[in-house]
Image 1 (cartoon, rainbow, N blue to C red):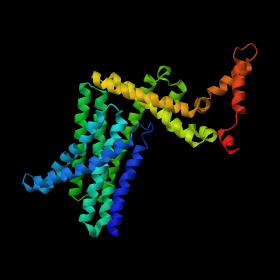
Image 2: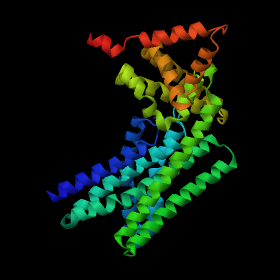
Image 3: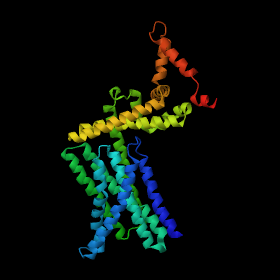
Image 4: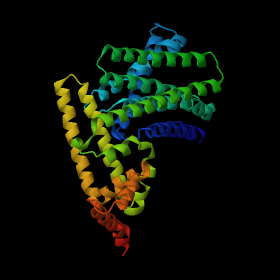
Length: 369
């Protein structure tokens, strides 16, 4: 029973960590299917690493202590990163945020299968092993591969020598961070220190993701406009994405949760279009540009379909709410039109539009009646 509880804990909690990290992807550009693939690869990477590490010891090339402190961190970080190299070269990949999340997933996949091996190998202290590893070693694995995913993603957007330097620094950090942790644990450091180092690593990844989100906002402001079928108010919503749930509360009250989900999906498509338009500028390969262009065309088609499903009335309400919640411009315009109505061309049009919106029945009330 204790072993089962320990295995369940060592499986579920790391996946919860991954779910928490995914929540920082506010634009929702990271694909769940890709994260699932990174989890599976992390498991395979552990199997390969275990075989290599065991062979090194068996052949007498290094002692077990040397493998733990030096060889294993190098081998494991290189193996975990293989799938990241593949995913980041794909046309449907976006930017640093995705790289960090996919890398975190590869690290978690590696960690959970390693947890199983350690727990079943020490059944007398199974629960202690599970707790100790989940809040320390697991986070080290996730941090290392997330950092590599970050620098690989940065390199895709920066084709200069600076991009290659970031890759070297990222790999060096991940390997040395892993080495330092293994050395500390092997030397018998208190468990609390292992926990602290693990959470420091995760904190660093969260900071990188937030910085990546800020960079993506700059890209959206640069690349999204009316030409790309994104209005200024929709762009404003994307640039205040942290407040999106608050902004959409009136939409939910007026039109229901299904419309809210469609609006969120539409904004996610818009964000992904902006990111990919920026990536086109730094993509030297014409074939790769064509691939990205096809992805953009698909995203635009999806965005237009979502707009049709949302409906013109709801879309008008969406844009009004964005302005009202953020800068109160809508109220200011109405006030000024009201003050200068006599002889003000267009005043009657605004009055009629407002009256129609106020008099229009709530769609939920229509369904109930």
